[in-house]
Length: 303
Image (cartoon, rainbow, N blue to C red):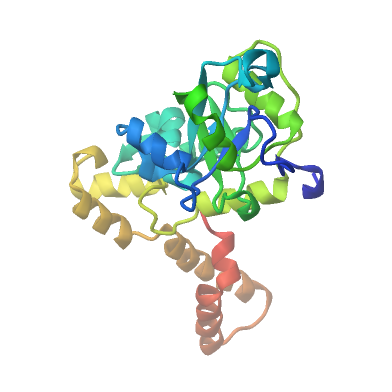
């Protein structure tokens, strides 16, 4: 899909416009009544340092202020959920789906990688209703500099009469109508499905590449090939779950399956070439070196 067809956020033209489900709440340190400070004070047990924003999940109809109710909304309390960076919680989410592939210390058998990729795609397309996740792609214009998620089951409530205006002042934008509907469906856990536009495929692939590549991020899963697991067991006589982390890291670092594949394939490629054309010993070695150092070829052998 063309990314121009995908619109998750919209601006709020009037700061005094009523709160709605799907309003994004960010830190406003310039205000004395910064809602994020208030939340941290009244809910000290919440993991505030992990939250980069909050999302309003109370139904819009209950948030509309009415003159006959002294310009107050119907809801006595306004429900919010914290928004966290996706890469900070992805390992925990993978564990929910791919726990049977877990080895130890964030290492997972690569046979579970497809399941993890499917999980990520469900998250990006707002289809991970079983866990209760709402995906928010990065957009600095709305105060979200990272791809993030809201865990809808981890909600909390603040008193509407006291903090309604503080929430108004802390908004950076809101979800577009179709995604407000989707959020409402996820929150209500209804049996009917609200259709929404899928997240653009090219942008999903960028997120997938970031979360699944080997980048040293300890918050992300590390995928092991079956032959890596087998070799470690053969060399140590132990299961991965029985090894200490430092020892395990060293063993895995010493076994680079891609380098091993490149070495074997370069030998075979030279053998095939020799069946077709005459190659000197010097040319053989040069071809092998070229193959083993070729970045594009290495990427083709990635796990």
